[in-house]
Every structure is written in C-alpha cells, then in structure tokens.
Image 1: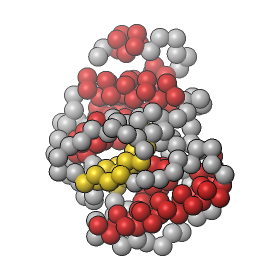
Image 2 (image 1 turned 135 degrees about the vertical axis):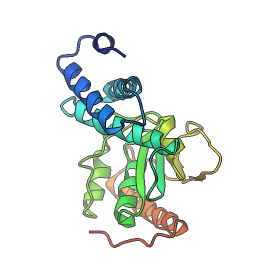
Image 3 (image 1 turned 180 degrees about the vertical axis):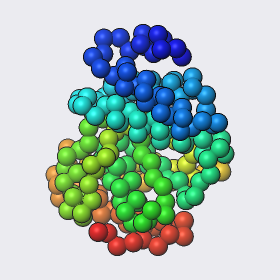
Image 4 (image 1 turned 30 degrees about the vertical axis):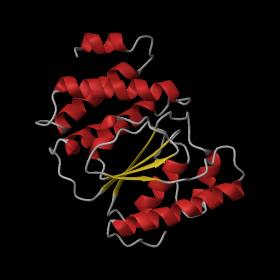
Length: 222
C-alpha cells in the first residue's frame, strides 16, 4: 500500500497517519525477510481500524496498535514456521475480552513464570476492561496495566497450541493438531465483587490444571 493509499484509508484523523507510517516502517525492519512491506502496512491499518471501533480513549491507540499488530504478525510468522516457538502458546477467547479471558491470560502468565506465552481475544470486544475484574486481580498483586480488549483474528488461533474458549460460541475457528478446551464460566459483567472473586478463583484452578497438562508447575503469585 502506498503512502497516499495509507493516508486515504484513514480520513479525518488528527495525528495517527505519520505515527502509523513510522510504525509500519519499524515493523518492516523487524520482520525483514519474513513479510513484505505491503503485508506489514495492511496489518498495521487493519489493527488500528479494529481497535478504533471499540476504543473510548484514543490517547494510547497508536501504542496499542503497535503491540496488537506486532503480536498478530508474530503469530502469523509462528504459524508459518518462520519464527520458532520457544514455549507453548495458549490463546484465551471470550466474547468481550474484558473479563474472563483477560483474567485467565494474566493468571497464566504469572503462574507459568514465563514458561507459557499467552494471548487473549474477544469475538465481540468491549470498549474497555471490566473495572471489577481489575480490582479483584489487584487483590492478588496482579494488574492489567498493558492489557486492552482485542478482536479475535485467525492468525492468533493458527499460532496457538492450546485454545481455551469461554462462552464465545462458534466464533473461534477450529484447526487440527491443537488442544481445544471450553471452560464453563460465569460472565463477570454486571456481577458483584464477591461473585467476580469466585470466578477469578475458579479460573485460577482451571489455569493450574491446564498448566499441569503442559508439564508446567505453577509458580507462587507475587
């Protein structure tokens, strides 16, 4: 995609055009030899547009676009065998990516001690994270400082070794050779904090059981 096409693809925006162009250039250098410039630009613009649809606060939109596009490109490269997987890849999917899947991702990252790489996504992502979910995770010394709801894309499913769904129906595509689990969990949206704590603790038990199947001993939480 040319610079002119990129500008035309983002009408009426105050500042992201040059920032997105710089981001695409940086990622083109980072993924040199794996993806061409046109693929990088398409991923950056698609990622930005997807996040723009649901973001209520745009101050970190370009930064989040960079993280989201980088993760998607990494996943695609892993699926194609261009980047080696050092640890198992686990993907958590719920509807809004604002509560259950986010809790599971943060807990898995903490309990695995970095021996599992985690992604999360939503079939219909919310505009922001559930504040009650954030509160009960803070009680465990965990936070969502760098997290945000992300749309489910095919590339992250292809890269995953384990796909855990949580009430997202048939939105997640099925690929052979992957371990699929469906966790029956109550949606924390609109629930009192006591119920959200119960859901959090249930997710922790599920995560610990999943880690055991991957041969990973859970680590103490901070």
